Length: 151
Image (tube, rainbow, N blue to C red; front, side):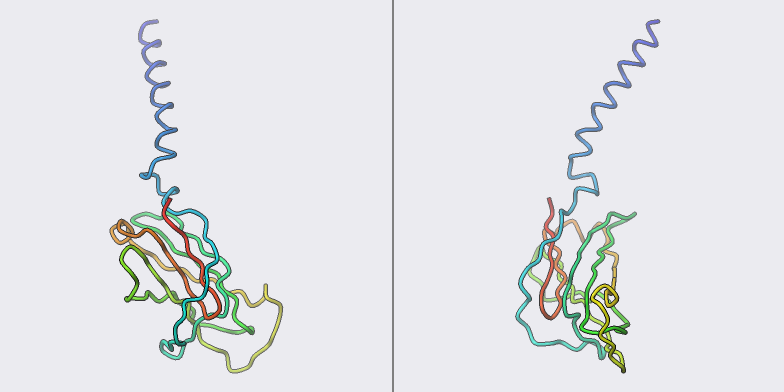
């Protein structure tokens, strides 16, 4: 009877500790909040191996992964068929920020299509060590940018 009471008390104490872990900064799900639309970064169109920035960045997510996080962005180019998409890290970003350019290659033939049919998704992995000093992650396109801040 005494051991079962002690075991039950220990289990209750362990479970009550879960609430603080859920809300702590140690929990990877709390690292970054929802993304928000920001103004396009005023810069010249930078060609990266024949690739140009996507027209609009519509979504940005930072998803926890083993050893770091996956930064996933969705963009909408002006026509269908764009390919070779990549998030290219901007090495001139301010301290505490990670800035990526969402670039892709233009197709030879352009078909308009609906915005949903033109969506392109791209992702990149960032290590935990790199994320430790980061407060803001931004993905830029030619018309807009999206950013998320650490909670």
